[in-house]
Image 1 (cartoon, rainbow, N blue to C red):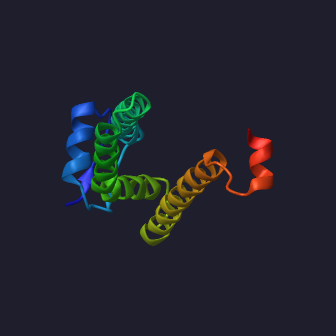
Image 2: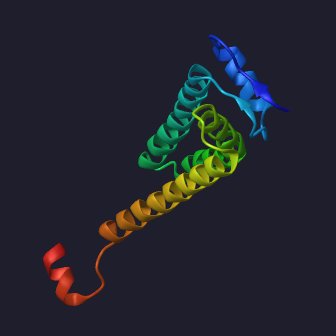
Length: 139
């Protein structure tokens, strides 16, 4: 299904086109339609991660973990429509379909590896040392 957003797009229209054009890599996405869904997804992720952080920091680790799992599932569900939306937006800028898909996939992979690197760095920096010489400096 080809999405054809034109003119001023309402949130309702952008939301409909986002889910209706789940795998539509052709057509048009207006700047406003793109940003409506971007802001919506940022709010959803913010709520999920904020709840997870608050619950985990107050020793409700299991419930906080559930929010992290829900955030991960939401990310996976919205991965393809986000790629489709970004690809349509790149095509509106005059970039070919194949090149826009490559750009978006490289971007998504770089985000995944960046987040993985940040998590790994945080784990390494907060875990206690096991070597006796280093333990002396940490206490």
